[in-house]
Image (cartoon, rainbow over all chains, first blue to last red; front, side):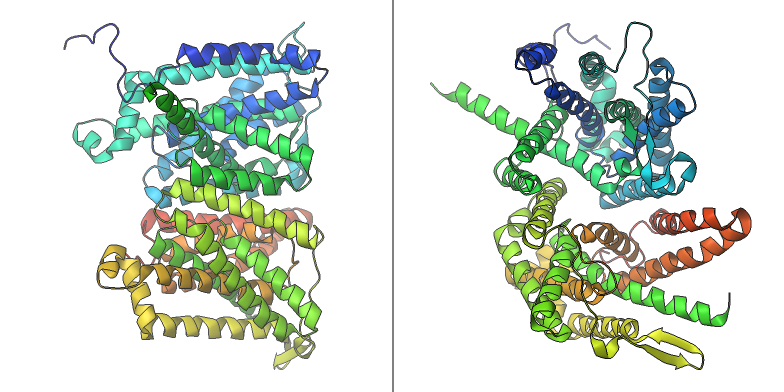
Length: 330
Length: 306
């Protein structure tokens, strides 16, 4: 085997972070609290945290949906598992983020692993429905457990503690912690997609039978990706619980899974920035429409419908198309 | 647990199952023939219930309300199909999810704009509001019996339409092989519009009949939509027979879970725990049933595609 050349031309399976996009974006995100403070709109720091958390959750969904071809309709269950882990640990006196957040990721990953063992034996629509089934089971289970608040859920006494001097009750500080975690995981996912594992995963999406015939462990690879996505979603859930200060079964309702799916489809399925763009666009439209009218859902629906009809492959494809158009112009 | 209670619960499960069937029948045909995931199907159920309740309230007659509401909802279905849904047939499932989710949001909010967010009341027809004595010492609400009768009648009508008419033949041909049906001269475009309208009409029948029993409110379509999806997956996508069997099965499991589980739990853990856990366990059982069916018969109980 000859080693690949040091800087191979990116193939169709590579997904570069692209410094031209990543650097200004990161700069904007880092400066955002400063800008918000200067404009006296500190409220937006909370909105931005929420956006980043949903971006994390939908990027984890995009990992299996866009790159692995697995349409999971139960992703909110993993988020909810993570959130409940933080809520239950906090109630029992474990407030440390160093324990609770990894535990949330582990619980999310474990639940994904166990349900994945069964779900990944099915295909297509049946996979959609069986992931939905597991999520619904969990939803009803948590609604019935009086010990954990039943339908009403649990309120968190405070945000998780990172250690002395790092009080997360401050929204700006919490935002930077979320941003740091988000950036690390985003880069990790990008690197994973460009690594052998990511290439195998995308090849399985393209032709599962051929990959099996070539001797790749198709089932194990999909299960690994599914578990990883569950763990990341669990971590997102832990952050979400901290952001809202509240966990309830409503976080795991099928419509929440639907919203995560919608975010990914809106942003761009199988596009590295798809989850991020989708979550940001979805929540921005929601926020803007909400300030304009109480019937914001109508506007949100109309915008989503326009995207489906006008930008068939999501917002990121729109960006790509205009970029290509600009390049093609004399 | 005595015989009367069992009989009563069986009738309840039959009633719930038949209403679920009305929703699932339209959904399974749209899914099976047009290969279209329609999350807005529950919205048609909601719109149907609102229209029936409004027309019934305005005219003072439940029957005029039901007929008018069903016709109006079918018309709404035609409009929706011609303006939006038609453009989504050729797209992948994910675009369909996004598009119909958008319709769902708009329908919910549209209904809230027109009728407000409070549930609207709906009276059952006076002549059916009393109980009927079925057996000595066993009475059952007349209205629920009527729902069972209406559900059975619609199921029979659908059966005749699908198995005995030319259009039904085209529908079945479309479900097992769309391209071939098209090549043999079925006017698929018109067939799709008709099917979608029929599905919308069935939704309105279910919504209108259940209106007096449940609350007519925004969001009523969502929970039942997922149950309808469960039904068609259990039954086999595209199969009317499967939808009927799946709906009755889900109705049975749901009702059994709601009545038997609390009694069992009550014996094990005491009444207060049973009261909260019962409905949840019943709901979980439905999804366990679906997971089990998918595990052993991945194509559903009555697979349509060979």
